Length: 190
Image 1 (cartoon, rainbow, N blue to C red):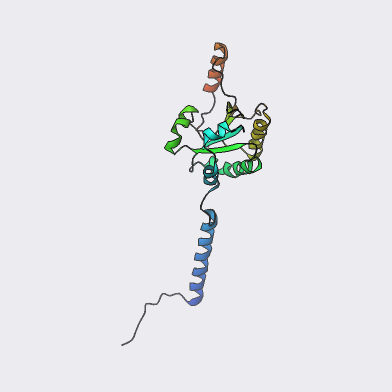
Image 2 (tube, rainbow, N blue to C red):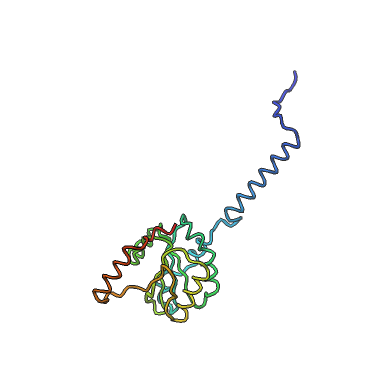
């Protein structure tokens, strides 16, 4: 009786090559997914954020980002948001609210979030002073943060505006609505 095993047709060098390729693919996948720490920058920031009511009452200006894990623009902006939070931790609160978390539905309604990323900007007294729609570079986030910290007007950036004043004269409201009708919608941040 002879013991026969199926011949795979691969020699020792081919098997070694396959093992090396598999190890490289696994290492590449691990690197692509963020290394051994599976928590992405968005998750880290959201987890360490103050609760919004606390942030709005502690005397520091606050930058609130409405985001989603699946949002490419949000993920692209996350390292810059981490940098802003680290640079200004003692001067500015950075709060992240995930639009897919039902806990934040009242805030989504209150701030009329219908596109992401959306930043809501508050002064040290917790008063809304502006908003920003769309992804922001580190330089833009730094300019917004600097203005909030200094209590100065927000920089003139595309997609950044002051909070609307409900007591505007009728002509200004009509002009603003006409202008807004021709602008791209907040979901067009592609």
